[in-house]
Length: 151
Image (cartoon, rainbow, N blue to C red; front, side):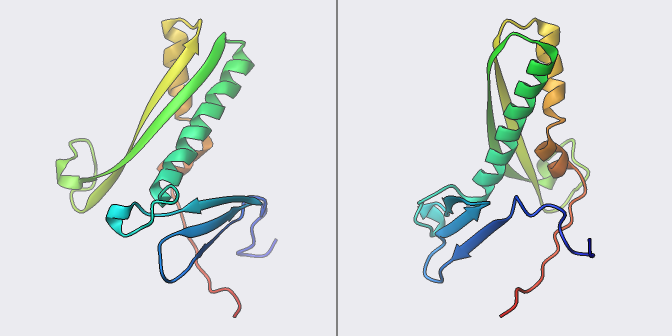
């Protein structure tokens, strides 16, 4: 594998935005979707915003991770629901943040577990939520490398 090559292109996402709007066509490994901004921000509100897609990635990964954990442990889980809300707060207003300037992006995750699980199992599920791959990605070191495509 050459430097800069991906070992796995199966998750490639392509976005195409026309100049007259924020409405963006997405191809996510063969699955079509639309992203947009809310009308209040100049968009057409025809799809989720980029931050809503990011929140969806965290919510779906968390839910899938908890389902896999429950199946592996033989837990009596009927369903798991995850709600994620993204917000930006001023760093100066964050009591437990290292940064003191600019904004802090915060994802609030609420996990609803349905099933016959005792308190200890539910608390363990909360710990396992932090092990979902998207959570690890968002809290780990991230590099974004941009290159121009051939004309």
